[in-house]
Length: 156
Image (tube, rainbow, N blue to C red; front, side, top):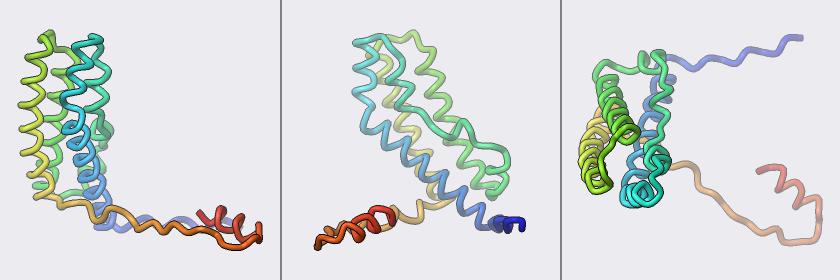
């Protein structure tokens, strides 16, 4: 007997999922940049490696397909594309700049301020992530029955 096919999410549900992923990704990029901004430039200066610069600016926006963007409303598409393009400009600058670390630090700070504005516009357009996840309940097994412990481990 053939397996039942999974039901495709409705278009509005797909759009909500795309919005949620876009906001999560933008928030993650902004968090990395704000926490690593000074360190990534310091490492670039010390080791002359662009890896810390590129790692801090990595993003899934590069892999967004036309189909995901098509799910959004035009004003939402503009906000996502504006943020993505600005992040792309920063990545281009960091990959190919011949500037010295002092100028890189200044340019990164300027880009981060511009990205903060873009991030606010993005979240205004498509909303904030729905939730931060589910609460995790930690429990300790009391008793000596190994079957209970195995069952709890398998359930996770």
